Image (cartoon, rainbow over all chains, first blue to last red; front, side):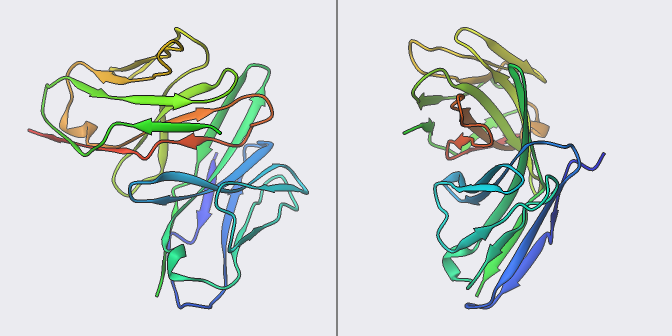
Length: 114
Length: 114
């Protein structure tokens, strides 16, 4: 059981380049989310999805696009990278079963924009 | 909106010292509260959680009690080890239709010396 898999683990981009951060989960969780982690600011929600075909914005969505065509995959797209997007990105999946729910995080993607 | 505030860090302790990391929150309704831990170079792991007032979460010697009257969820451990060195995040899940969304504090870096 792989859990949440993020690729790549490290990436360096030039300003203006585009790229997609991949996220896949094999736990059949309904919900998936993207966060960015910056020093002294904790993790902030970028976008999230409550199911295939349904996405919504989080706290810091500007400069990022998402789509969710399947339950398993939730890619994050940077259309035109900026130095302010240098960060560590975490994908998470989550489930609800009655009163029980839980979150599983991927191991992160460290992105540097130069 | 929802918010989580953690004590200023970093925290440096000697092995076997007592640990407290303060966490307070602001939320509408009845949130669930979490502590996550991030070891160097890794993703986030759930340390403990509490889903209603007066619940105590515990794991690996760490404890936290959900105090609704003081809107707090302080993390404690009676005797820390070098292996506890990590970043600790307090987080809340607002409930209702907020599935897939966590609100994090800024994180507290803990360093334990032998």
